[in-house]
Image (cartoon, rainbow, N blue to C red; front, side, top):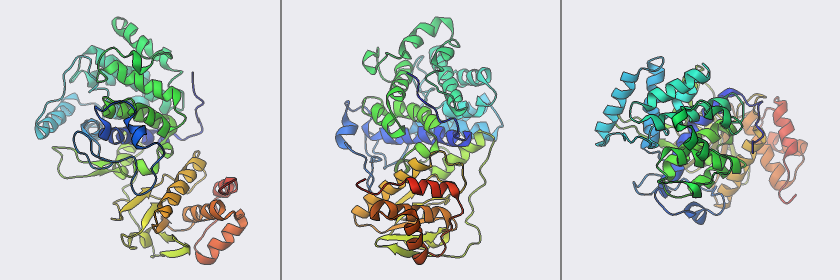
Length: 446
């Protein structure tokens, strides 16, 4: 069964979603690696939106909450090579992998049909997707062949083609038959079986670390999950090799649902180091910048800019407003909801980074707004002071503040605007799409 695809979503949203989704899936699955089925839902029967979320850390390698594993580390090595070398330089990629292996004291797998090359394939899928199917699948096979055999390379080619389709706004599930036609004849039957609509993880023949059940499980979940969170819940609940399966699934789901479809409580927590590459800590802004560079649309490095400090000001009990400068100077005892790019984290115990642009191109605006409001409600239920801000503290900040009053107090859009403006005169209502979204907010209990 194919799914409706939001073709209006800008490609850049899908590109960021693919790379960030991959890392988020990796970090989400890490605590449950090699565990039994159902462990994720047993621990989190409902979304965990307070200070402690499903990014819980722990697991066999004792990861921090939101810390990604070697799966994302290898993807970042590949991605940085593709950007810095201006394309595929296999010798450079191999040298980076060797330095990483030396730092980790273990060599990359060379198994003929393991999923180790599949899990790092997302950056190349992004980089070559604009050049079409042939370039995308050729690069996927060549990069896989650095460490893996032909069967794994065919899986990487299929995966890369499905990501390419999704980045262009197409339905990767509907593209499976055409992708299978690209597979070498001697491997086609096994891939056709694993990617069939009636395939389930219960039919997997062998370890979940093999390449076919990894990609098969990703498509199985994508056929059944209504959104990014639901898709990832399905695969982490499979147990077994949850890290790699969730990493691959997160890339595909991120390309389908976009950056805005990834829950902010997950994407905000993602971080990690890459052994052999110094002490740099990769965080959400770094992943977004790399993804944009891979797609040939580099994001400018974040700069706060010369802006005055506004706030924090309490607009409603426990709900505070500021601009970026005011939020950065506010201190660590707030739970911060950031509605703009912020660069380095503030040092607050809780900081959520919502993907919301101050323009009329937010095709997933309602979903982002609902995600933010649900997080704010959970944080307030824990007794935390919540500080909402964007760069200037005007349009995006005003949207969330007014939406909060619409939801919690049942005020009309006009009433909510008047209340917020009285306490926060920096409110700006220029954005017509924000005004329309505000009208769609339903009060609690409706």
